[in-house]
Length: 250
Image 1 (cartoon, rainbow, N blue to C red):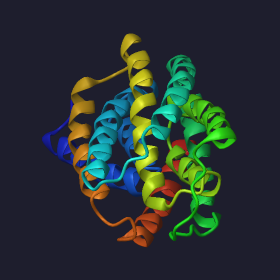
Image 2: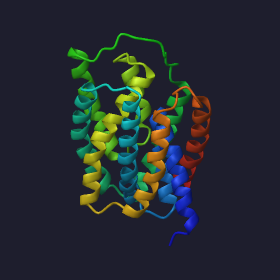
Image 3: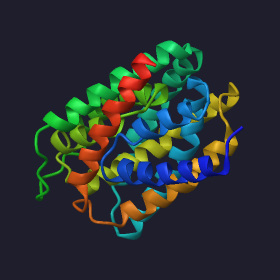
Image 4: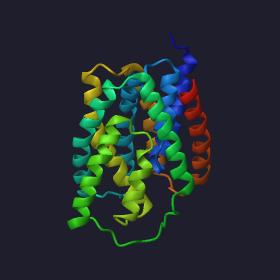
């Protein structure tokens, strides 16, 4: 039985997760362990987290659009490809046992820390975008596999999407983020449906978390992507390392 302050904690964590996921990625590395530590079985925590992500990405997409930032129809093409992949990934996640899930999550968390620390510095200046022809087809194939991982666990995937969109499609960071949140919204609907069908969602906690996620995403999408970036990454590295150690050994 959860206490009232647990719900406040969940909203606060959700706000941070929504902000981090929107301006960068990896926020689920905070929300997933939080749900597990509150007593949810790993598979249910995974499914519950999808409720908040759907709301978060819907709010972020609306926020970016309100500022005139949209990559339609490119984001829809990638979203459909990832949607198909996420169905496969979600079915894998539903059937995996709790201990194995925790170990995989811990490995993912530490891997993402290395990406955060050692990834090349992103250029924010104007670039010639590559969104059609062979670049579109390659992107759709890559995002199909991103979708499989997104349906399975999703944690840390935002960083990989940003890196790919920036260096392969040559989109600036703002437009990469706008594309990312729209794609995640589309494929997360498929993953959410699979988890719901298999009764792996705590809807009450999911909606409480969604209040925070949605608020954080709306604020972040309308805020400069350069504000607070260094602090968020430093905080995320520390939190991810501590949570990964706890998941692995305890």
